[in-house]
Length: 101
Image (cartoon, rainbow, N blue to C red; front, side):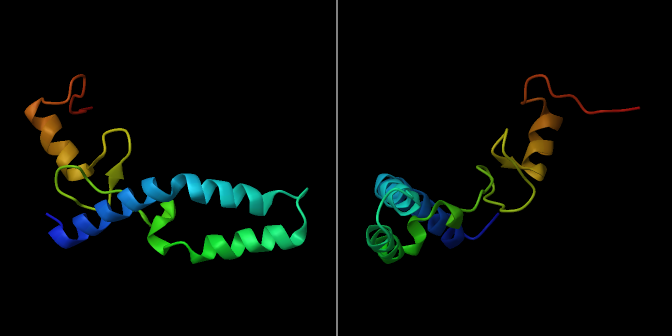
């Protein structure tokens, strides 16, 4: 089990990303638009830099829904390999069987 503080910090980042998503998208589009004058594009980049760092989507870490483990994360199941194996062994994931050859 991961530390509660790490899990909560990541959840705060997720909420902040959602809150600033529209603002960031508009500023990024303006900064990339080559048809705009260079001054306007530069101002957009400055405003983008003034936004909180944790409002960037790259700061969010994928974590297991059950244990909070940050590594060996499977996107399809939104859990780590350890939690996935436990649930699969108990037969709680439909269609998943243990391989043997």
